[in-house]
Each structure stands twice: as structure tokens, then as C-alpha cells.
Length: 470
Ligand SMILES: Cc1cc2nc3c(=O)[nH]c(=O)nc-3n(C[C@H](O)[C@H](O)[C@H](O)COP(=O)(O)OP(=O)(O)OC[C@H]3O[C@@H](n4cnc5c(N)ncnc54)[C@H](O)[C@@H]3O)c2cc1C
Image (tube, rainbow, N blue to C red):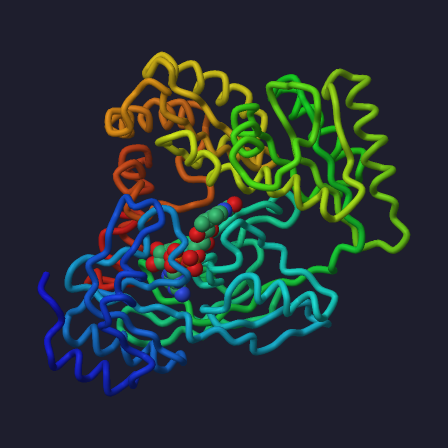
């Protein structure tokens, strides 16, 4: 597709003014880049509208000139969803970053879509409240991107996915009209729940411009432990025990293979190894409570004592300071970065029913080693949600390009096992461009028919984020 016409560019420039429009090479390079370097965008224009009506008018202009739009937030996504082809226009929401209403009685906050996730945490905290969506990119991703990808993150076991945290949305539709679905209602059974169409749609159905989100009491007590477990099965036994004995106070429950742990501990700066003993599997467990007077550390120590007696754990340490807690989270959250020091990696973001995680790990690691001898599995993830980041580092004696050439073969092997176990080939990062063909391969004909029917009903001319998801 060729570049948008001069007439279209003039209308967009006149609408948005100098701050709302860029064709600068440096700016474009930043917004055309994609984190994994797997795709490179080719947009020659990027729009930065400041208000919903500007988004709506820009979309209407693009519709009139038959220009496709790629919505973009913080551009931290991992699936190539915010990458634009030649002739397409990026519409980035970063100037729409206001927090417009924080309500301590409704326990809600209303925000513009370009608000950085961390800024919502900070705003809630000043009112002694919590917005619980938490993930590694929270300092740069926007809530609009989190909504569009239905992000998961570290606290899903307690609070649910982004989808579970939303009461209402405002969305600009592909023809430039605005659907005002902002609402603070907890109960509203008036027909199809439209907000859920746009959450997880990755910008293919509408541009999210505002959202009303749920807030929760700010935790007053946090107890965190690093636990050595002999097997993933034992980790699940520990999880069940901890859920029961803590009154479901678990806010996070992360599993890591020894390779994942060792990689972080070896390559990241200023990390202290949590346990002296060696183990094949590690768990990071965190309990939280907002109840005054709770003694979560004692509760967690009791749970871990019971777990050790039962053989679910072999060693553990409960943190005594914020610095120790930060060290544990740095190990867990630093795994993807640290894995970069081990050469090329092939990654899968998959989920299975929680009870099937041990099967997934055993079958997946065996099959991968059969396919590529010497491959080094690096699984870790939010095991409390059945979500494993099933990463694999290259064999030490294999050339990087040779290993990466096996990407699709390894995907097929792992995704076949995931599907056989009743799982999903995308747990939390979405489909974007990266997994579009995989979705078509694994989804039922009925599901694909419904997805296409929804896309056609809302965006019949395929103007919003074409080529993504379906
Ligand atoms: C270090 C790191 C750790 C991460 N950890 C996790 C994790 O634990 N759990 C998890 O779920 N994810 C995780 N992610 C992925 C993260 O969820 C996404 O990167 C983030 O949600 C995307 O937000 P963004 O603003 O950067 O969106 P972008 O990357 O800009 O866009 C992502 C998609 O959303 C669309 N989009 C963006 N804004 C809008 C809008 N306003 N309206 C409509 N469509 C829009 C884009 O078109 C694109 O398809 C991690 C990412 C990083 C970099």
C-alpha cells in the first residue's frame, strides 16, 4: 500500500496540530520498532491525539481516505500487534494519560487509555487503594494496551486478568463514532456485554480511549518466601495447601526451573541467591492482607513447615525486609532479560488447567529435547493460573541462526501438547501478528467463523489493525 495522500495528511495535520502528528525519522523509528526484533514497522506517519473527539475525527478522516490505523500504546507488546505496514498510520494514545476520577466509595478509577499502568498504581495508592494489575512492563505500558491485550501478570491468581478489572469503556469505532460504555456498575445485565468484545481484541475492533477500572483495599501486610520444591507436582501440592491454610490470601505463586533461576542469579547484577541448597524447581510465594493486625509472616512460616513435613518443599526462606523481597522479585522478573545471555531463545506463552502443569512440563521438555538435542528448557511462570512461559535456550554448540530456524517446528511440538492438555497457545500476551497463523491452526472452525463474523460486523472495511489476530 502506498503512503497516505497529501490531502489526507493535510486534514490530519490541521486536526491534530504540531504536537499531534509526526513524520520525524527518529520518532518513527522508535514507534516502528518491535521489542523482539522479529517485525519492523513501516509507518511513515504517527498520530498523537490529545482527546477522544480528536481520535474520533482522525479515524473518520482515515476512513474517508481508506487508510488503515494501527492503535499503539507503550509499544511493549510481545506479539507484533502494534506494528504498522507501509501506508498504515500509527495512532498512539500517549498524550491521553489523565486520571479523571478516583472514587473511594465505588472503589473505581476512570482513566484515559494512554495512562501508564504505574501511574494508576500510584494514584490509587495515594487513596490507600490498589489497582492490582502488575507486570514487568508497568513503567511503560499503557492501560489501553493492557486492555487491548487482556494482560495477565503477577496477581491474576487473586484478582483475575485485566478483563476482570474493568467496569466500563469508551471506544472509538472504525467509522469514527464513539461508543460511550463508561460505567461504574457492578451489575448490568442489559444485553450483550460489549466491553468484553474490545478487551483482548488487540485494536482490531475499536480504539479504547477511556476505561473505568475496579480498585481494591491496599494490602497492609505482605509475606514473601522463596521455596525449593522437588517437582512441579509438589509445587501444586504446596499451592493447594497454601490456598486453604491462608484463607486464599495468595497474591502470587510463581514457579521457576533451576535453569531459569540460575540464569537470573548468574547474569543479573546485584542479585543474592535466595537459598544455599540446590533444587530442580523453585517457587516464589506471596501472601497479602489489608486486615489490621494480621501476622502473615507467622502464617507463611506455619504453611511452609507443614509443606516440608509433607515433602512438598525441601528448603525455604521468608523475607525479613523490603530489600530481600525486591531481590526475590528481581530474580523472577529478570529471567527473560537474563536468558538473553544464554544465546537465542524460542518462547511460548501457554496455559493449561493448573492440574495439568506437571504433564505439560514433563511432556514438553522431553519432546523439545528429542526435537533439538542439547536444547536447554527454561520454563517459568504464573503456575497458580496454569500459565507457563515455556522458553527454550539454544544448545551451547549450535549456531544461533540454525536454532532460530527451528522456531516453527518447536512451536508445533509445544502447542500440540498444550492443545492435547486442553490448554491455550496464548495465555496472556495475545495473538498479534506472531501467533495469527497458530490461532487459525488450532482454533475450531466454529470459533474462527464467530471471530470473523464479529470483525466483519464492527469493522467491515478492515480499517483497524488489519492482519492482526485473524
Ligand atoms: C518486561 C515485560 C514483562 C511483561 N510481563 C507480562 C506479564 O507478566 N503478563 C502479561 O500479560 N503481559 C506481560 N507483558 C506484556 C504486556 O502485557 C504488554 O506488553 C502490554 O499489556 C501492552 O501494553 P502497551 O501499552 O505497550 O501496548 P502496545 O504494545 O502498544 O500494543 C499492544 C496491542 O494493543 C493494541 N492497543 C494498544 N493501545 C490500544 C488502545 N488504546 N485501543 C485499542 N488497541 C490498543 C495495539 O494495537 C496492539 O495490538 C510484559 C511485557 C514486557 C515488556
